Length: 290
Ligand SMILES: [Mn+2]
Image (cartoon, rainbow, N blue to C red; front, side, top):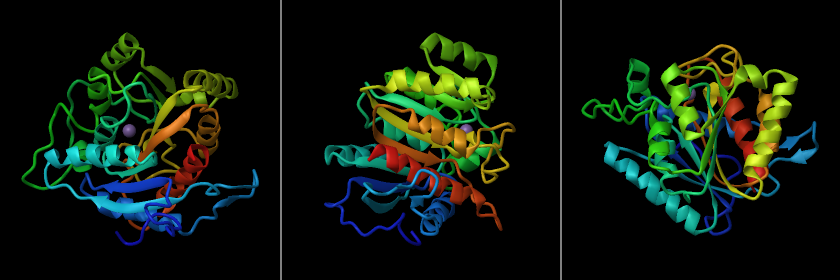
C-alpha cells in the first residue's frame, strides 16, 4: 500500500468504515493503490450540492489482502464478517469482480444487491485472456472457467447470497444470460434506458421501492461508466452511463448500505482519469452509506 484511502486519521475503533484491497488480478495492486492515491487529491466538499461528502464517514484502511491461491479468497469472507460484526461498513477495493462473490458470502442473505456493471456476469462458464488477467493470482494458479469475473453473479444467485439483484448500466450479455436473469428475477436496467431522462427517472423510482427499509450491498464495476470517462478497464463497452446518472441512481437508494465495493479498474499508463472517477464515486457512496 502506497498510502491509505482518504484522510485516514481514525483508528479502527473510531472508524465506521473499514476499507481493504483484494489483490486479485495482474495489475490489481497498482490499480487499487491508484484509487487510494487519487482519493487524496479530490475535494471532499461538493460545491454543487454544498455537502461535505465525508462529513460522517470515518474510514480506516486495513490495506490489502494478498492472495497466493483461490483458497485465500475465503479470507475475504472472514475479514468481511469481522467488519460486519463490529457494525461497520465494508468497502472493498478490487481486483476482479470475483472478489465481490467472496464479500457477499459474508453478507446477510436478505441483502438487496445493487450492481453497476456494463456486463451481466451471469454466464454459467466463460474464460478469455482478459478474465485470466483480472482473476490472475500467479503463474501456477489457473483461473477457473466456471467461477470467475464473468460468472460470479450466477454463482451468487445459485447460492442465494442475496434476496434480489439489479444490474444498472448493463449493455453486454447474451440471450442465455437474459433468460437466466428473467428466470431468477434479476432486474437488468440498460445504460440505454438510464441515458434517457424518462428511463432514469423510472429507474430511480424502481430503486427506491426496491431498497426502502432494506439492507443493501452496492457493487460498482467501473466499466458501467462510458469508456470515454473511464478508459482504464479490461472490457470497455460503448454507450455507458455518466457520473451524473450514477449519482442520481445512488441518491435514490433508500435502504441502509451495509457493504460496498469498487472493482475492475485496471491502471493504464499516463492517464489518471479513471482512478479519479473511482475515488470520487467512493466519496459519493460514503456520503449515502454513512
Ligand atoms: Mn463488467
